[in-house]
Length: 400
Image (cartoon, rainbow, N blue to C red):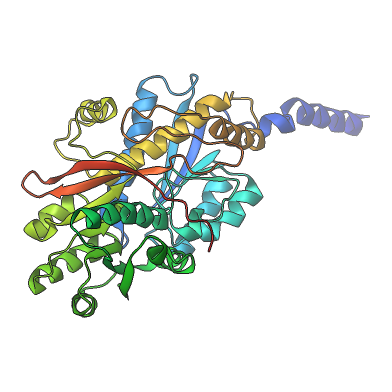
């Protein structure tokens, strides 16, 4: 009898202490979101300010009471632009950290993560990596602030074509320099015959690594072809090498760069070598204090200078936060349901007012690119910033 009583007491204790399966899987009072950023790797000079922008926006949201009363916990992993470290970090974030959503950084790793994102149903904001291999083929769980790097080149070509006409150049010659994150975009531009179809003669294509220490050979070969415009799909470090080499050779032509090919730190580094540098951007520069969103960032950070990549991190976190707000999550929501609700919440965003820090953002059930245009800026080396020239829609060429 005593043995039976002991067993009965043990069973009662187990039942009383048990937690329902749904409660075990609940997200709790904190909204956990993950981030895979390059803080110390080869793209850290632009990755680190991007990460600070994202973290500062989350801090700002939390200072205002969070989202629907719940604080946001941004769990950052420095993957050093190493695809294997990114995969390992993603495994930790998606399992033990149980994140609802994710922010990504690099074109080197997000293409490898896309199947895992779909498998686990984790909505991901890719306001940084926009390579053709990343967002060229729509993925149900990957949301981008703007179009691909190839789209940026297309927009830049649209402007250059009009510029050539103003200068009386009937058949402008173009050269293209690209790096590892731009490989797939360079191939896409070639596949759709973009330069030819927009009226350019492509006279040179050159590759330069993100880890390059010299651009002399590439720029010398480009110089020999006498182009009217140089388009670059590179990050800031190789861009600095390119601009200095061009200055040394006396090659003075417009350099039309994608978003990661120019920022304020680059202008300080190369000075007058950047006088012909134009940059396409999905976000505004910190000097545009007439914009309410930029003024807010000034008020929050109290900084005199911030890189344009900081704005991209801020806007990426802003879009993620608005998706979480639209998801209407509660502490009792299961992780699976929370991820599904975030996806639906992001898909519900229509003409989202970004306070001027970016163009308005719209997503939908099948629309994964938030804006269809880029802003064009020209380097102002005297003021160490970039000045807005125009908003340029991406021309639609079709497939081939």
